[in-house]
Amino acid sequence: MNTLSVDVAIIGAGTAGMSAYRAALAHTPGVLVVEGGPYGTTCARVGCMPSKLLIAAAEAAHAASHAGAFGVNAGPVQIDGAAVMKRVRDERDRFVGFVTDTVEHWPDAHRLRGHARFVNQHTLQVDDHTLVSARRIVIATGSSANVPTTWRAAAGDRLLINDDVFAWQTLPKSVAVLGAGVIALELAQALHRLGVRVRLYGRSGRLGPLTDPALQALTCKVFAQELALQMNAKDLQLRRDGDAVLVHVGDDVQRFEWVLAASGRQPNLQGLDLARTNLPLGPQGVPLFDPHTGQIGDSTVFIAGDVNGEREILHEAADEGRIAGDNAGRFPHVHRHPRRAPLAVVFSDPQIMTAGHSHAALTQAGTDFASGTVSFEDQGRSRVIRKNKGALHVYGERGSGRFVGAEMLGPAAEHLGHLLAWSIQRGDTVQQMLDSPFYHPVIEEGLRTALRDLHKALQTRA
Image 1 (cartoon, rainbow, N blue to C red):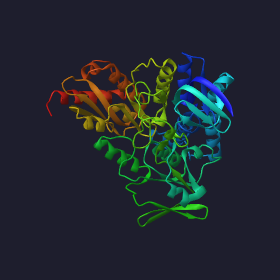
Image 2 (cartoon, rainbow, N blue to C red; image 1 turned 30 degrees about the vertical axis):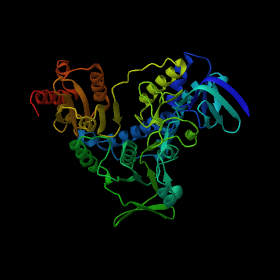
Image 3 (cartoon, rainbow, N blue to C red; image 1 turned 60 degrees about the vertical axis):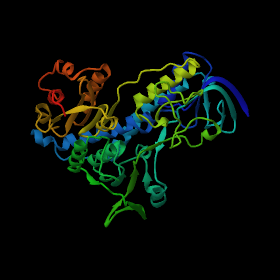
């Protein structure tokens, strides 16, 4: 058994782990990153980038097949599934290559291959070959698909997770998508637009991440116009049928070539042997930590990225890695770092966005707030480009007039979300936002309409 002694050991070389490495290295050269899986972040290998490549192909197919509405006749759309998936894999491998090149250029002394587990709070065992004594440790092991064991037992090798989709050599004929969250919605719509027979199954009546009741209902209505949805499928059962899977919901039975489990993700904590430490753990076994320092309790162990179960988004993982790595490097002088305004985007069509505090969070916190709304059905630029679906709800705090959050289903949500998150982070009031320029004709004029509605509501007591 080899032995190593370092100042900071980082478990995981994903987005959070890489960010933690750079931050810790600013304080000490004694940094070691332990990785048991392939290099290349979840985002680059099986998440953000390959999914957006698939969505881009789907958008091209959808635009071509609906060009007739503009008086442009493109002819019958032909989708070459093998060519679609080849571009997805080739571009994905290119993105992964950038990440792996970065890690492989780190000094050999800073990299160790193998799965780490705690022997005690200052010692890690890596596989059966190395003991690492570390003064501080950063847990950055990410997350993985959460698949019920009953589904795996019933569907066998016909059950997929999103990681598997991006290894396809061509597109399948039919897929049942189990789940109603971000990953499920993005992949279900993309596959449908690429000619795959798709049905999305959700356990509740909620589709996507929006919490505003009116927007929840609108989301289901809008996507049901395009996708086959089976919501409230609490009694869903799977049964293998040769090289296919039968999906039972009540008396309804559908047969699919594949089943895609997209029912959420879970922190990668298995195998870490956290029980060998005295770290404070929450009810789900996730360490309790300060999001402004990354520190778990008052210990010398820090946590960052998807493994903490908080904001499972790349830019948040990078920020958390930087915070945890900085404090692990400078320990015991732990600094509190500011966090960015929350921002999340779903790359569906219409897109979905949340910025700042959600409707549910404001309600739960007891915040005295008002809402402003706009529908995109008759919004000028949205109708011009035939993207006139959805609505935007904006929220302001009574008394201060500060803009505090937004939820949206509609066009260009990825861009409007940034503008709104920036305003929230600056502490803008609704009046200050309305004093800003709005060009014509643009989708942002819809935002102005919603802000005007909010401003009026703020002048009236609830």
